[in-house]
Amino acid sequence: MMEEVTWKSPSNIALVKYWGKYDIQIPANPSISFTLSEAATTTTLKYKPGRGALKVFLEGVETPSFEPKIKTFLLRTLELFPFTSDFDFEVHTYNSFPHSSGIASSASGMSALALCLTSIKETLGLEVLDFFQVASEAARLGSGSGSRSIYGPLAAWGTHAEIDGSSEHYAVKFKDVDTVFTTFQDTILLIDKGEKTVSSTAGHALMDGHPYAESRFIQAHENQSVLLTAMLDGDLETFGEVVESEALTLHSMMMTSLPYFVLMKPQTLEVINAIWRFRKATGNPVYFTLDAGANVHVLYPKSHKEIILKFIDEELRTFCKDGSYLCDEVGFGPMKLNEHDLD
Ligand code: 2P0
Image (tube, rainbow, N blue to C red):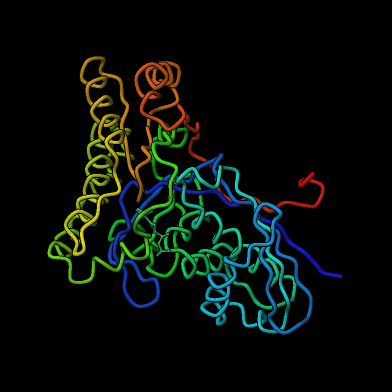
């Protein structure tokens, strides 16, 4: 008979991008993200005394190809969770978004698993001084961006002069923002559902020795400062300028690494141009950001939901694969679920 614990943990979208790392998952620059509400992973971790055996089930199907990544994660987190070598585990994980959507599941997946292990640590009577800090540090060891999924509405990871308590080892909750940003909308346009040609891990590694690395890392600190002030003041225009510039800088870093690569598709650029045209013509506050892929995150205040969704349907949807997009918004972080919540 196995014991079990379940956490639902969200995905997040970076506004200032983490791109480049050293040692074991130490970021080369600070980042800050919106925590999402709908895009999430629900993970049940079943455990019983044993010798570290592991089975992974994805959407109910045993998936041995996921085991090496989780074994590496358990080894990396052994200092935080020393008990894991004395248990056998089954990981049962479900994503709220389609597997082939191009939405990264590593942040939500690794944070959900980290939260489950932190709960087990508590249940076993081992000391957990700050539950979410431990979970964030553990998530970071699985996926850097996962450290930020632990807190909503925003989370900041990496040392930054203007964020009290910020750390390279874990993310911190960030809420010193005008209320317009705590209900921000993120409509994710699914441009390309295929597998990425270059993984994020490989992309991060290409920042080692990158000709623009040093100035990029300095720029990220500066952009984060400007963004924090803009968000505190409710200054949408400056917010949009920093966020769009960060997205294009991220992709510029990819295009100027060796080997170089491009993750945007022609439709990504069509969408960006259409957003710029619409914004110029109507004055509506609508902005974009990009993750490490071709999909476009369309960001706008809740007050403009109706008009922007109309614009998306009329002018952007045509660039999406099968016309598909996902409506999401800023969320408030992970949730522990009980058995009756799972039916
Ligand atoms: C971010 N990304 O800040 C950046 C921007 C994608 C683009 O962090 O190697 O899966 O596991 O630490 O966190 C995606 O990379 O990489 C990422 P690892 P991760 O969200």
